[in-house]
Image (cartoon, rainbow, N blue to C red):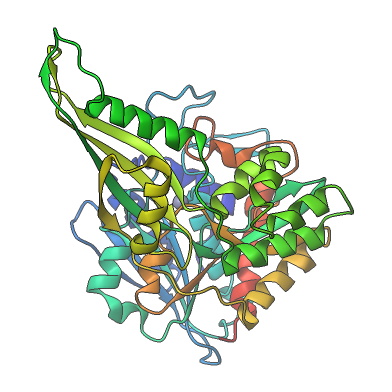
Length: 438
Ligand SMILES: [Zn+2]
């Protein structure tokens, strides 16, 4: 029997591999986990688009009483460039009960939880009811094309028979009105990268010119800044808001959350809800952010064409066809719009028996917390596994204490995680494996 690290120790070890993406360079981190899992007796496969960016798939054989369950997590991290850190981001220090470093929350801590929750079945733990398949993934932060996307396209054989997965995007304690909630991801938004092209007369920079491409761009940007997109209440958002409302004490907060469910009142209720409204806003609208502008090649030449790239995120059920008229309704007729890249549609959320089990695990682990369904405003690797018919629930429970915005540091300076939250999550993931029946 090998000696296993604690979840905090494994998180520290993983943080010390600098897997900043780009370029990623996940190989060392993946090899470290492969050694641990292989020495513990699991079957392991390493596969990927290149030697420097492999993925790892490990399997623990179960008793055959449940389908295999996938635990999927990425080991690449976002950049630390230009950020002022209190502690070095790749040292993996433990200070004041926290593991510090890039990836502590997103999501090397989560990968450590998954690995140790699985390895707890070794020794006197007995075999789990079904096989446990751990996927350690590269490249999530840049879209997953060399990670989960690559595996789904090239090695679907490694995931045969899997219907459910646990992944990131859920389980972080969230405080509203003094109550603790655990939002568990059941659906995510869909990226729809859109380009707007503005045209107008060009000319010499020495002569007056009004109404050109620059002015049209300016009008569109001001319109985006001053208008919300239309309200849509998707199934996932409705389930989340109902859970939130029912878990809150009486008025006024409960009543304000309830008003979000009436599209005629949604936007005014969001404004009243402050920080909570800011969190919920993207779950009620297709979201648009202007992120890149290209136009002009010389300071004395007025450009006749300017490109504006828009990061658009669509709610479940929305498509480019339904969204582009909405966007035009806000920015007007000046731009020529085209969709550059759209991520695949996701299935409707399913709150079946496994989701109820996940909720029950959290109710037992934290009787004062309320688990609720959650729509993620960004995207995770869940969408790649969805192409194989695998439904991912975001379930990495962290019982953060109130008052510290741990999630805010996720792609920013001073990312850190309480050791106690890592232990809480490892227990919860272990329970999920133990109780999974399909
Ligand atoms: Zn992540």
